[in-house]
Image (tube, rainbow, N blue to C red; front, top):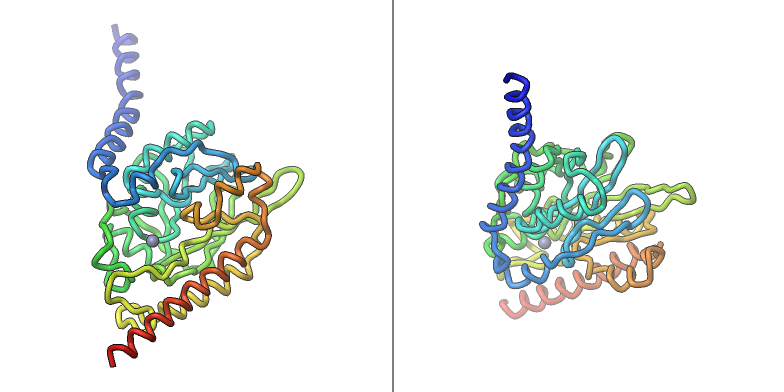
Length: 305
Ligand SMILES: [Zn+2]
């Protein structure tokens, strides 16, 4: 009798993690419908995962980036997209033949619901550590941006993340043999971070950059030029542009793939993703966009005098 009983108990126990995971993901999908925001359904369209280079894979949705960097000693995942993107990301990781439980570290570009919303569910499913810049870590832990965020008051809350570790921007984060370098590229949010790493197959090593959003988007009334809640916004943007311009960058992937024409480039095949000028062009376009915003704010200021 006993061996049979033990066998049944064993089978039941092995099913527990499966059901726990399915329930978590399902309940999150129900709590955050596709109608969460005007663009959410579009952003969350499924996307077949694909290899970017060697150990670096795209596991995001059609409209929101999520990057898997793999090694025999564990994987790193950057970004969680929307709360209800988590099931898609997990499915994509599995489709590529990797185990979600082998993701040991989850990182983030910036703490808006469309890039950080899925992190809590992904953390629960994978058991991974989550690490963020100090400014981002506080937002992740609250699941809500603070008054220093340019989109404060219009920005949607998202599931709070537990046990967020802090790193200092510029730090290198490691899992097994993997090393990814953090770069402060704030302005869009106070804690915004871009990531770079070297991906080497037997033939060549390529510098991959996952660049954060660089758009000066804000709630009505917020001014990047003289904000009291985020006084370093312009300086942060400028410092980030300088960093992105100087990075070794063979392949650029952005938080919103459309911001760097990912799909057009990928249509030319995997080598179509290689463009050593891409980060520089991304920074130049961002500088021009910010300059237009600053001019507009100056003009509005003159009108109010
Ligand atoms: Zn954003």
